[in-house]
Length: 314
Length: 249
Ligand SMILES: Cc1cc2nc3c(=O)[nH]c(=O)nc-3n(C[C@H](O)[C@H](O)[C@H](O)COP(=O)(O)OP(=O)(O)OC[C@H]3O[C@@H](n4cnc5c(N)ncnc54)[C@H](O)[C@@H]3O)c2cc1C
Ligand SMILES: Nc1ncnc2c1ncn2[C@@H]1O[C@H](COP(=O)(O)O)[C@@H](O)[C@H]1O
Image (cartoon, rainbow over all chains, first blue to last red; front, top):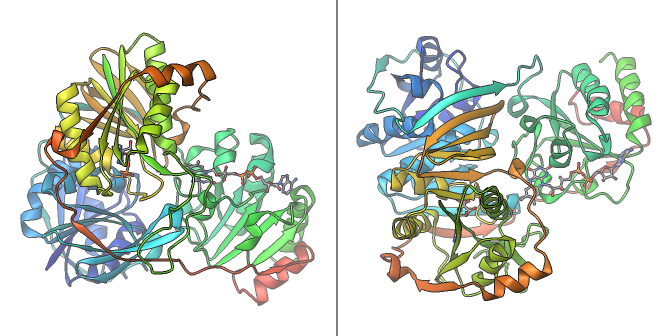
């Protein structure tokens, strides 16, 4: 059995999601190749070649692949599948976008966001906003899977796989890239951060969100997250949303401030190692999953927390 | 132009799903069902495009049990013009749904298919992408903003890290994200009007058959439950416990 992993990268840096997806692939077979599809990806391919356990790195380059256009990615991956029994991609916005296309073109059932490899054809995945876990067995000859990266450990460095160029495929003639707005931040990436500080509707304004959540995050070296209500109200950018339809995070420490704990929010953070909730409503559902709950107004609790952290040398 | 909007009947988003004790699935008996929220956003967007004079007809299509007629009625009350129900009691997988929707698309020849990015029961996030691939029409998923003109559609998409804008030749498939719009409440007159609109009830065979599923559900289990921890006295107590007890600082 051979498995192809489609790398997560931005044409410059390989993302840690790739290492985690390689771990899922190695649970299936030892013959794991990584495809780096993009534009100007020589450096990314070299990074992928260093992942321990990788047999070979394939590179495919075109303008459309450089923009991660779904049609271009599926058009590149499908012809390669003659040589593989499964293709795995991290369940990022790119992975979710192209992977079901590959499944449709191969006439197989896609398997979305697996959290466990049970056997060669059997996988577990969350459904109903994480309120249930479904274990499915595929009868397809080839399997097309996205991987919830937070459920797998990152594969180690230390490999030295050979790199080989492959045909980039036909591109995406009917889809044109127009523009992008990518937020730049010096904070750790939300999905990979060890600590996440999230703010909810209680913040009341974007200014308050900046004033309260960000300094605390910076003191802890944490990423910033938000509830959908905070994002919808414009207090925080969309990219910060944690939950069923936002990002799934599983940090060592998750601090929810002024977030009620709706099921859709819990879906994105309940696998965090330690959860802290600060909420003035003692009955807020977030306290049912919090390891440490502080029933307080954030307006006094957060400054006190900042001071306590400073006193503790943090 | 004609817009096709696939809508799914799913568990209401305010209901917490419960796993059946025999681990065969989620208990949906006596559970409130509604239109999948992302489909509602897709219907709303289609209606807004029609209100702007950019579309003439909106066809809502659902694959599901007879009760999915109610879901289609909801779409008609928001402003869709007619409905198609492909009635089945089987719970078709995304691949089967995509194949049936392809057949509907070929029969109806819409210029745009607007649908939800994800159904909140299976959380697959797959059908739109698969439909686009099967039709060989371009796709834009996770739409945040849609600008439609007669030959192309410009879609700003929510991607990890920010936003990406694409331009697609029509016909195309676009899937809606949460921030695309806020669906209206259907007014009473519109609910009454919707009762007079037609819903064609069809079977999968009318559209070439549904095919057999490719996935066997071995079991459905409840995830490890978290238990409520302790309430701390104040911030200093919290920091002390995070340092010593939890060891995460
Ligand atoms: C299809 C669908 C998908 C969704 N996906 C997501 C998702 O991915 N992520 C997500 O987060 N949500 C999602 N939602 C929305 C979700 O249902 C909730 O509406 C949302 O999470 C609520 O956000 P909140 O907790 O910030 O706001 P609220 O529920 O309004 O909670 C605010 C909390 O702040 C507390 N508070 C107020 N003032 C103070 C104060 N001064 N000090 C301390 N505490 C205070 C209140 O007690 C309250 O508990 C989704 C909904 C749907 C229908
Ligand atoms: N049974 C169905 N009937 C009609 N549309 C569906 C059905 N299942 C899925 N869809 C459409 O596909 C979208 C994505 O669903 P999914 O890929 O299953 O998460 C939904 O928002 C609907 O627009």
